[in-house]
Length: 91
Image (cartoon, rainbow, N blue to C red; front, side, top):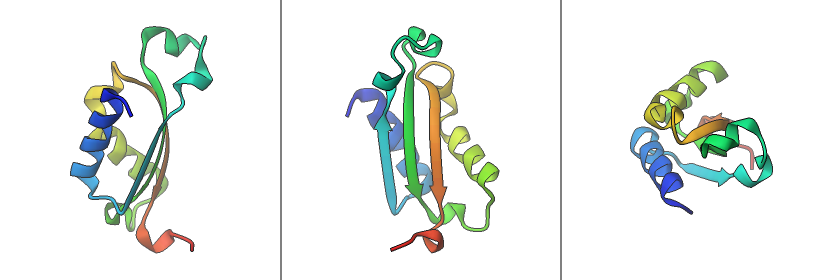
């Protein structure tokens, strides 16, 4: 993991106390993409947290974007979010 991902993970863990937090850097899949030219990355997040209980998908995504707000303008070009409440996990 790199420094940018470490910072993202720290913010997410502090905000959501997730049961699961999988963060992947998919920037290499977007080489040559206009958004990649600025150096901002493409990331995939799968997170399970009680904070998502009772919220729809849009509200969950807003919480994640709010958490990472400062990084969205410079470090993150794209973020694929899967936000799950513990009761929605499948075995």
